[in-house]
Structures are given as C-alpha cells and as structure tokens.
Length: 100
Image (cartoon, rainbow, N blue to C red; front, top):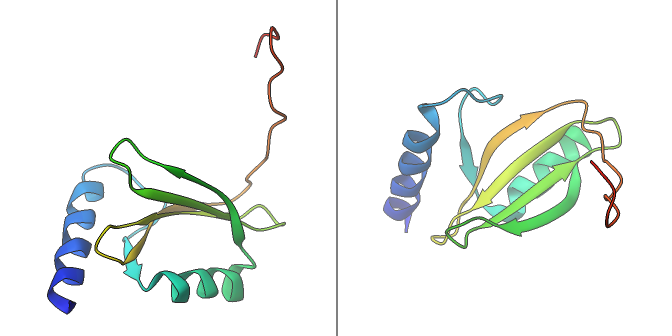
C-alpha cells in the first residue's frame, strides 16, 4: 500500500511540475487528514465537488476569508493538493439567455 501511495504521489508530481502552480509542491495524504488540516489551518471547508475527464474526484475547499485549495482524490486512495490561492470570489449563476 505504501508503494502504491508513493507511486501515485510521484505520478501526480510529475504531471503537474511541468506547469506553473500556486502550490510550490504537490502534497498528498489521507483524504480525511488532509480535509481536517485545511479546516484547522485555513478554516477551509468543502465547497464543491466534480469529476475530471478521467473520472477522478476533484474537491474545492474555501474559507470565508477567500483562501481556497483544489484537491484531487486518486483511485489508489490518497488525496493530493493540486493548487491553492487567495481572493476566491463566487459568481452568480448565469441565467438562460443572458450574456456573460
């Protein structure tokens, strides 16, 4: 299991190190522990979920102060922080027929 985790972390790191990122290094760990850390340290809570083109679960955590973190849950189990930032602003949903 540890080898699987290390391989997954190395793969995610290789995929995202090629481009710029707000997070200096991708951090992976137990999903529950990572969510607790984001809440305890940054008061970020789960705000939205979706699946990427490969079917992997993505989670957006954000705080009332505007900090945010994007997390990818790998099939092998670990959750990895892809990027993070500040000044998150939620937009109103566009209405049908309205120019955006």
